[in-house]
Amino acid sequence: MSNKSFIEEFDKTLNSIDKLNKPKLLLHSCCAPCSSACLEVLMPYFDITVFYFNPNISDPVEYDKRLNEQVRYCKNLNIDVINGDYNPDVFFNAVRGLETAKEGGDRCTVCYKLRLEETAKQAKLHGYDYFCSTLSVSPYKNAEKLNNIGVALEGEYCVKYLINDFKKRNGYKRSVELSSIYSLYRQPYCGCVFSKRETVK
Image (tube, rainbow, N blue to C red; front, side, top):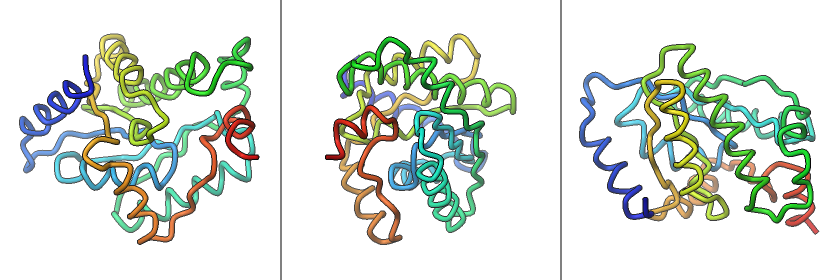
């Protein structure tokens, strides 16, 4: 499925929704800045809960800083935030053997699946109609890989996955604008020690 098809499928889903009877969406979020533009697009169509699940962030101070910003931002929108279990060992065990993989490669794909699968599990457990992630709003994240994982998990957990590519239609640019408007903390790296090693000099 091409990037154009992602947008077409996304639009098709939104157009099918009854705004007077919004379905429940569990939205995995990596941080407040990335969630900002996604929430702006999704709120007219869904009853949203944000799921902050990011065991890839090994520094607990950084983790809490991002979590607090997520909660602060969502409070303005009257959106609840669920803080998932935080255990960096879950991430390190998942990517064992991929420590030297290039950023954006196989290690990141494993990380995508780790976070999306936990989102799907929680969505199934708590009766959500849809699940998806804010990750695709980043120009550094591969929407095709994310969507392929999401669709596979939809089949496994019987919860609809919302196909998307939030970076399109100036999604990333809008996230930067909203971050400035709300004075959101924008971290200089994705989250894991490996991305920090490559991006923070």
